[in-house]
Image (cartoon, rainbow, N blue to C red; front, top):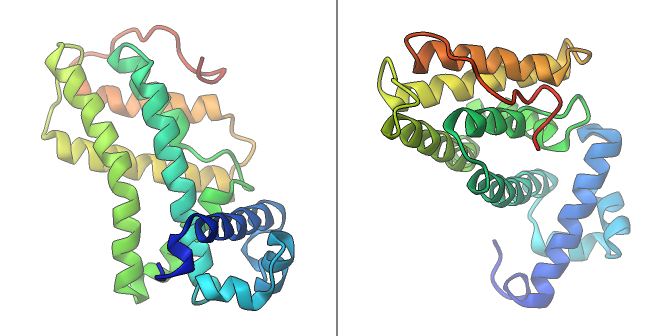
Amino acid sequence: MRRGPGNTAAGRRSRDRVLQASLDLISESGIDGVRVAEIARRAGMSSGQVMYYFTSKEHILLETLAWCEYEDTRHRRAVLQQTTGAWRQLELFADLYLGAGAADPSWILWTEAWARAPHDAQVSKFLDDLMRPWREDLAAIIDRGTQDGTFRPRRAAGDITLCLCAMLDGLSILHMHQMPDLPRGRLIELAITSAQVELTPLAPQIPGHLAAGPT
């Protein structure tokens, strides 16, 4: 982040306008439809003003992803705190993790960033930092479920967390790029079935399945 106006209240508002404009364009047209000039027009700024706060289009896209993840983390932690029962929390986590479909702007940005990461160590670390709150929240669910006897993990919680997040990544990518008509309820069911294998000797009956979405 730049020093100066970008750290003032007015500067943060200007940055937020740019990031919201970027997010709107991605939702409407995908990455290829994002142009700095169009972002500036939608944000009510000049291209020069936009580039005062950001160094490049790639910088705008990465900051847009971070902005989305920050808001997602605040929302996720709020609703998880209001949800009781380890299995219910796990289902809700899976529902929040999975992409909404091919036009989901967060997942479009993740896919774009993943393509850049192998060639840029800074981007790779940036993405790992963005993923850490997801892994921490999942690990906390597993820990609580283990302590109250709901879960009996078959291996280290860190390994389970890594595997379940990777599985949810794969299901989201499949849903986005190959099978958009696959119901999200089915994706959640697959995720929970895999979690049962990791977390219980025998598959339990899970009440209140989220096939119709969280309540």
